[in-house]
Amino acid sequence: MKQVNICIAGGGSTYTPGILIGLIKKKASFPVKKIILYDNNERRLEKMGQYSEILMKEYYPEVELIYTTDITKAFKNIDFVFCQIRTGGFKMRELDEKIPLRNNVIGQETCGPGGFAYGLRSIRDMIDLVKAIRKDSPDAWILNYTNPAAIVALALDQAFPDDKKILNICDQPISLLMAYARLLGDIDYKDMIPYYFGLNHFGWFTKIIDKRNGEDIAPRIKQLIFQNGFAPADKEQRDPSWLVTYSAVKQMLELDSTYLPNTYLQYYLLPKETIAHLNPNYTRANEVMDGRDKRVYELCERVIRHQTTKIDDYVTRELNKKDAHGEMIVEIAEAIFHDQNRYYVVMVKNKGIIPNLPEEAIVEVLCTLGANGASPLYVGPVSTYYKGLIEQQYAFERLTCEAYFEGSYLKALQALTLNRMVVDMALAKKILDELIEANRNYWPEMK
Image: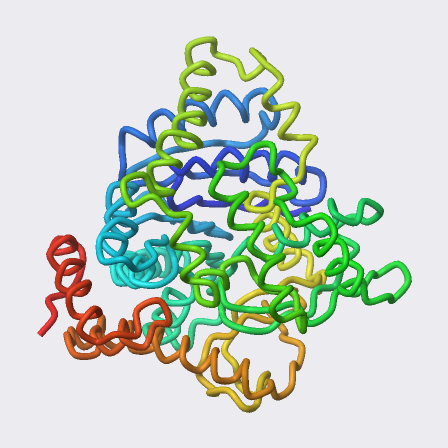
């Protein structure tokens, strides 16, 4: 069987161990020859690289593992690039969240003004990254996790309209399926076919079919959420804010039980309730820095110090649990590699999938994935309510991209004014001016 070469762009991320565990789990069906970890943060990459060398030596010794900060070395003869970059790091994420909150507007990583700021930072680096990849590996599949995925996907489509091997994905639909499976207790999430429509972090499951018997299990899931509430599948390992995020699904369903909502819809549909749970002095960025980031890098340091991953049960636990982020990207690569036509919710250009939405919108829908990439399933027209919500959100995303490419202050202001978390133009201007000052080293000049 052919072996593949993989580059993880953003190799210093705390999600890298989960991707490596995913590759270890799939070594029989998706054999890897070489893994390159690429990052421009030398300090983080050095620790993650050393940890990864030890992990792979113990569990996948036939793989050659390289880590580098040199972009000219990262992408030579690569089959798959897994992108998970974070332009500006956690310090800029902290500003993304705290600047809106100072103005009594939700501060969130991928939604609202925070997602707007992060999107304008991500576009440049992602375009440069794709150019570097295409220079040395013109036929590589680029599987992109980089947030905010909706804005990044739209910008990449504008920058590379003919590139058919860029696939923008998000693990939240899979995370939700895992949570539904835990709630039901009698099904594996891989036995679910999830019919879904919307934009990234802005969508709904219309039905979820049990592959084993053809039953739509969405009504049963709704009933269990009404009875028991809702929590992540891995709630014991999640930071506290994620438990609040998932719990909002019950309230959204009590208000409108038509479809199962993505958790991120709380920021748009329940802004007053959501902002009441947010601490303007200690946001999710702080929680991640003090929690997940610290835990993962302390693990790396222990492993490096002892020169083995077998100092505790960490790897064993990881090998035995389901990890949405790590497993999804590996399984998508495997589905493409083997032309398996598996079902996944991914982002694709609309082109009539939802005929009463703009053709050029990047929608998130159920697709089959094989050697030619994503083949979307037809959704059909959506009703007035969903059409209105999606068109407003898409207009925000499109104007954000146009503001980047044109360096337009006016379009940036219009984008923020349209966002459901802001809506007030004078407030949008105040937040925009503060974000421009904070992002001077990252954004194009706005005129």
